[in-house]
Image (tube, rainbow, N blue to C red; front, top):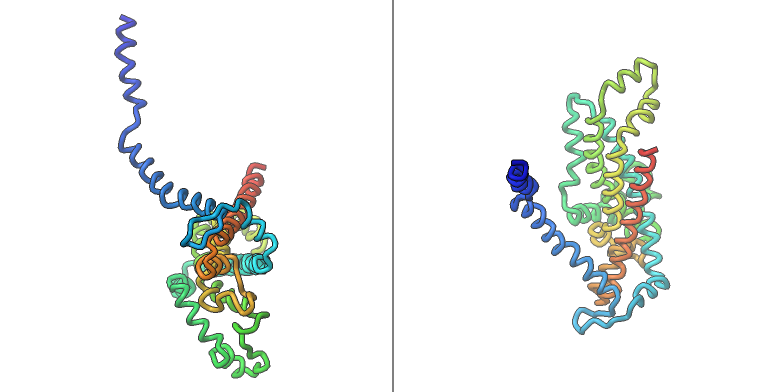
Length: 303
């Protein structure tokens, strides 16, 4: 009887542990699509970075030749420096501006929805359309120079996009105009998740606004900060539309970014192998910055 009972229970256990075909399909189909559209092109891109290819003739294997050339490429070094400046200014100002706007607009009051929508509106615009608007504003006879002349600052009037000393910073402004609203929405979502009882207890204890911000708000926004950092780093390294539409990396490569240099090298100079190597470098930089921050954040949370 014991043997018969055990034999009857075995099929039930195997049936309980059997994976549903629908569940397998829901897991494997997206994984296959991801592998086809993401992982396989990434591997192909790395393979192309080891070749010399003009897009027409068969690729010629050169090993790490493109990466060795990159180490001695002055334009690459300039683009790398400009990208670092872009990452610091664009990332830092968008994070500070987005957090500041979220703190100002987190409370429900009359008219707050209008200001939220006004700050978020540039996110809806195409980056190319945004660039064309700012290109007109930056012209010598554009709105910015006219405004400076109207307020008595005619000495500050400038050919903003034609001067190598100001071109990069002039390109950063339209990108910030668009990014701050997006970061604001992320921080607003994070602020909504903080328990108001924490602030009430802090006020009862006599904590100042700054103490509440540093002891409650910032620690509670750690997870949001990780998302914001990832978004900022990725957007910084793939920023292309604004720079290309406004200056195409000029004048004299003064506003050249890694993304614009990769595009011009691959599709204008038809050096697709070297362009693929630049794309790999961009991926390594983005991956390295994000992973370094996440590892540090996890260690601090565990401690």
